Length: 150
Image (cartoon, rainbow, N blue to C red; front, side, top):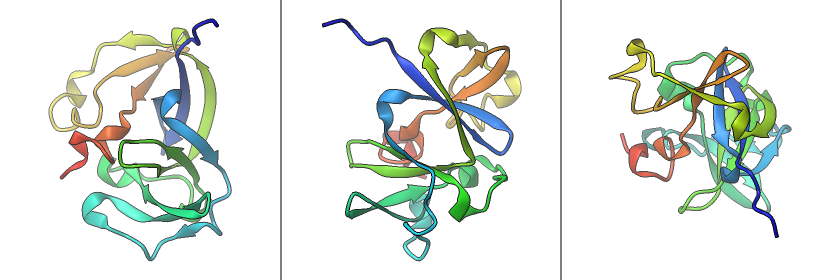
C-alpha cells in the first residue's frame, strides 16, 4: 500500500488565510445554527459554546477572540471544523473553508518581524500559497495542547 502525501486545508477568519494539517480534521460542518448551543461557555478556556456532533456535545473555540480578529460572518452562520485532540473532538469556528491541497503546494516563508514576540504563541510559521501568506494554524495552541492554557 502506498504512502499518502501530506495534505492541508485552507480556511479564513476575517481576511486572514490559515493552513491546517488535514490529519487533524474529523469533519467540516457548514450548517451549525441548529446544533450550536451558545449557553455552554467557558471563556477562561476559550470555549464559546457546545456543538452537537454525532450524538454528543463537543466544545467550540472561536480563535478570532484570542487573535483579535473580526469575523465576517455571524457566529451561527460560521463553519465549524471538527478537530481531533488527545482530549477528544472539538470545534473550531471559521468564516469560510477554502481548498484542500497537497502540502507540496505550500512554500515556507520567513516570519515577519511584526509577528514575532507577542503573537508568536499563535503564529509560529507562515506558508505561501500562490504568493499569498497563510498562517500555519496549530490547534494545540487553542485547545487540548500545552499552549492552550492562558
